Structure formats: structure tokens, C-alpha cells
Image (cartoon, rainbow, N blue to C red; front, side, top):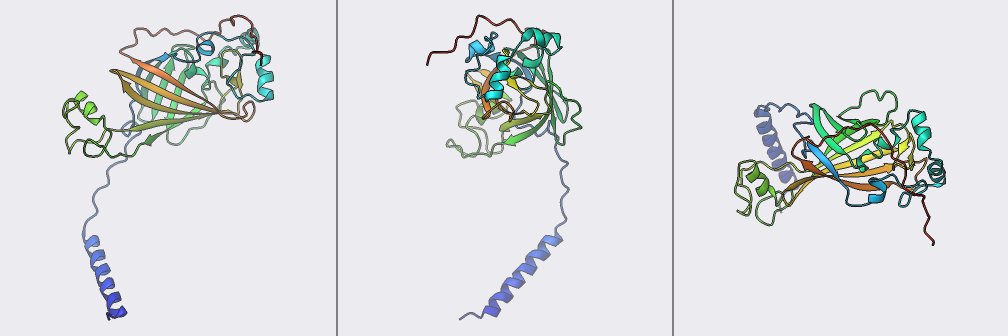
Length: 293
């Protein structure tokens, strides 16, 4: 039988040898931390145009007052929506209520997205001429409430997954490598073994410190207590680049549950169709007739 003390002695000797070996190796220089711009998990910059493929009656035109179907309003929210008066908004200088962070991405607008600096993304909209500032890292003093509020951003990386075509990584890495001038052509079995991994992931943005605004142009409200959480993703289909933005609005004042929508934008080659217009709400078409249940 092997002595327990002998086993303990061997383990202690091995531990000491390992510790000595590690201490003898000089620590390597730590690479400098990458900026949010350098660490981007997905490239969202460029010119984009909204693709209105659903909810046309609520997005392309101004719905009649009282048409708040599919929005989880509580009683206070319904009462506020029923009091909507666009002329009163204009008179009060609040004609941008429907163009705040809670609703702007749902409107038929164009976007210009670019890095303002290494820690700040800037989103401009031609509709309403709004500017959103997405700040990575610690948020600055929020200041006064505004239509676009204070947006704090972070990258959400996606772990590498097993590729059934060989190696690790996303199956479309071969396409990405070929477009960048390296690696095999699409269909040639994926990138070479030494190819750097393609960044994959999402951009998460949480916006607070908002002025009360509208989820829809017809006065469907969100309050100053609302929190807007968004997830930005890039995808490519049929040779076109698309930006998908999932928006989740939570509001203890007017909503019973989170209001969740998904908005799609298609990349444009340049800003030749950029057409800035100020905040304005067209009169609603017709009068809302509730369905007979």
C-alpha cells in the first residue's frame, strides 16, 4: 500500500516545481486595452433606409386617435392616448414627441451612423433631424431630459460555434474572408486555419433620461420613466446588407408589459437620398372605428 504521506510529499514537490517554473518566466507585456471602436463586434456604420414590411398603417401614416392596437397600454396610457391633440403639441413646442428614442427607429426614416470618436457612436435621422449619441463605458452626467435621452452602449460578443464544414467559427466566414481579399472563394471549404476569426455579436443600447414622448405618431405615450433597450444586429441576404434593431420599451407609468418591436434597415451606397425634414406630424387619416367583438 502506498503511504499517504509519500503521496503528499510527491504532490508538494510537484507543486513547488510548478511554482518555481512559473516564477522563472518573465511576465509578458500586457496589450493595451482596445477602444470600443477597435473592439466592435459588428459594423453598424453607414447609410441605412427603413424597410417598412409590417405595421404599415401605424408607421407610414398617422393613425387615427384611439388606434393603439397591439400596444400594451394600461388605463392611464389609454386615457393619455385618447387626449392626443397634435395642435396642442405644436403650440407647446413639443412637435418632436413622436421622434424621441422610444419611437424614432419605427418611423420611415434614413439613418447615418458613424463614429464620433473611439467611444461614441452617432446616429442621425433625416426624419425629424434627430441626433442620437451612443456612449460606451461610464456614462457622463445625464443633464436635462431630452427626446433622445442618455444612451449607454456595449458590445455583446457571440461565442465561436462549431462549424460542420471544418474548424471553428461561423459558416459564413469564408464569404467574409473572400470579400476582404483573403481566404478562399465562397464554397471552397471555409477560411484557412490561420485566418483571424470574424467578429460576431450585437450592439446593446440602453436609453434613459427621456422626455415623455410617443410610441406612435397618434399620441400613444411613453413617460419620462421609460427605459428603451435596443439590440443592433447586421445580416447579409441576397447580396444586400441589413441592419436589424430590436427595441424593447418598458414604462411603469403607461405600459402593462414591455412593448417589443423589430425594425429593419437596408444599407444604401451613399447619402444621395438623404432628405432632412423637421419634426412634423401629418393629420390622421379618417376616424378610428374600434372593431366589433
